Image (tube, rainbow, N blue to C red; front, side, top):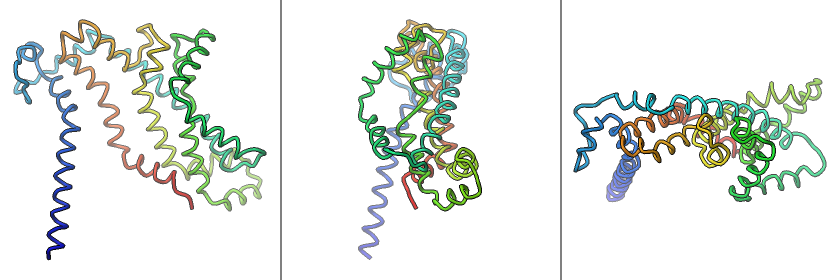
Length: 280
């Protein structure tokens, strides 16, 4: 009886802790959304923070699109995200297949050296990429934004582990039937590994949407700004400091797509990551 009471008490304490922690984590998002619905004049007159509003307004969302080129920032980010993700998949799927299924001299050594790239500091890679893109006269271009992000050592490793979990008998049978490696990869391995591939695509989309450091370095023309740069530009400008509710409305517009994407595909993300690290 005492053990049951102790177990119930432990579960209750854990639940209370999780609820409190969830409220702490979610509060900034609540405050962001709440502020975006507040009237600017009333917000500026607040001397004590007001945690709800009885007169919400959508005017801030209109100003977020009319006072600053938020629509252009969203379009640039969409182009960058779609193009980068598509090109990355074209690169990493064959690379993962080669390391998982093809046999060639020095494969293990090459893959070990490939994985060692993950230990190189990001700052050093940015410096090298910046020098290369500038030398190729691709600064302030979508191509300059996209090219350094079309591959990922981690995603190749994750997909390779998933490909290796597929039984060798399928590959041997396909080879006996005269199936080419490319056809086997596209018709067999890619469909079987769909959960992991979907996970990689979603994670890459989130990564591209949140990208800030590289775009900040390689673009200084507003016509090529992504949403991360656009929000920072708005914040640094007089407009961002004077009209906080409109600023929060812009942040909500930028944040909502990723939140919805994660909530819709969270099960696939968790299933894909766990499957990628499981063999057999």
